[in-house]
Length: 313
Image (cartoon, rainbow, N blue to C red; front, side, top):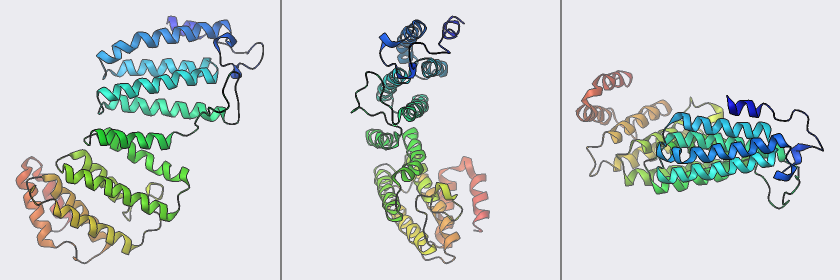
């Protein structure tokens, strides 16, 4: 309760001018100076504990709470500096373990807070601030690039692929992307994931991202989740035929990989919903893929039987 008691003394009525524009310790009120000092000491105390137990929920939660107190009680520019330092810390933690989903979740919180604080400063220049150093109200572009960097470092990164899928709709909106630019992004992402799949078709995280991309062209995809918004049935058919053929090619030398068969059946189901014929897939092929899945993954036989019924095989 000690920290809460101290933070409760924070200013409710700024003195000697607008404290929102105070950016240097000398401009802090005594209460703010005490809060800033305690926050820095507590964050420093937690850092070695964080390194020792990088997957402890409550260390991450406590750090988030401390930074939220900074946002609430300190001048905006001062709290931004603390959040920026926190972004550096979480980047360091992810360099130790790029798949630490606790750190990825925390990174999203840090980025969200930095964006919110940046929006508060849009159009403002605070005391002591260099006007050339603008605070970003959106970090979507740099976070998208960060996922690219982390994926290239380690393809098997569920959290990086998941973060990427969450960023894409907002990325397109903020870019005010045209229909052509949306198609280009989808094509680039499909090329990116297919290169990864050819590198390691046994990696489950890659198939999840591929499934996400193909789900965005589905007839049932919600409008806000679509990457391309003007696809025709012919467009969908061509995308699916291309992907089916590319995934089929993966069977050469890796016919013991269950993810390939599962991916083919997912694509086939989607293809039949778009085009009632069987130009890209046949009933015989789908039956063979299901038989192979039952052989490779017998523990999920019930699941494959249900899929057989849905596909009427």
